[in-house]
Length: 148
Length: 148
DNA sequence: AATGAATATTGTAATCATTACAATATTGAA
DNA sequence: TTCAATATTGTAATGATTACAATATTCATT
Image (cartoon, rainbow over all chains, first blue to last red; front, side):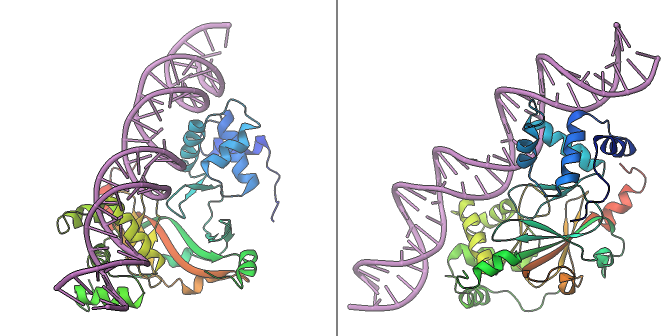
């Protein structure tokens, strides 16, 4: 999609420092992974993919890292179903579409900044997300006939 | 808030039949509970509260019931964080605000029907939800000074 | 009202994601 | 290079959810 600035270790380290997070090996790699892949992965996906680059990596470390990055505002946790959390390094306000057939998650650029709407006087909004569920174009095509 | 039509066992049974769901005891009580309380409860909350009325109730039964009701479109599962699912019997499109301090969930009537917006050609949208996180008025007041 | 096949519920035992925690290793300022 | 602060590891809990077999309930039909 949009491959703007190349994501280097150095640029990731800078981003971590800016957020006052110590740039340890796993933090650098996890954030870099999320920025590069944009795949809304689960902890396990991150763990398995990074294990090839960082042989000693532990699952717990991925949990800790992602938690640190989330608290620092560098990563946004997504909870589109009960089972597993997913993580997104794009923290500008945008929405997410989850295909109920293939499970893929798509970013959607709906404008939800205005959606703070009515009946929210006195509420402080820190984070917002628009979630849509349905069928992605590919799965919609295949399901045309055999709808459940 | 809006106590419109009184929720009777009979009205709930009718709603179940309309959705072609057999009105068993736990289904009637779970749906009635959700319609009456509007409290976005967890499975455990439903279980504990209904146990007083239905002494033999099992947690598994609440899981099954809520799953059946969800599939029938009578109940909407909410996943605002990783830990536990919550359930809402109001299936018209509306949003949810979760207070990060007290954990309470508020319904918000933001208009998200239009939010299907750009870049979604070919996508079929079945369900949508707008989630907001932040502080509710009460907690915002208390946190004025001691912000984390 | 009684019967019986289809379906729902129960309760226990898995499973799976996440967290707690103590031991070890790494980071970065001095 | 040294050292205190902090991060990572790995194992062992925890907590939500699911699988499943035994039992009970529902409801259409007698």
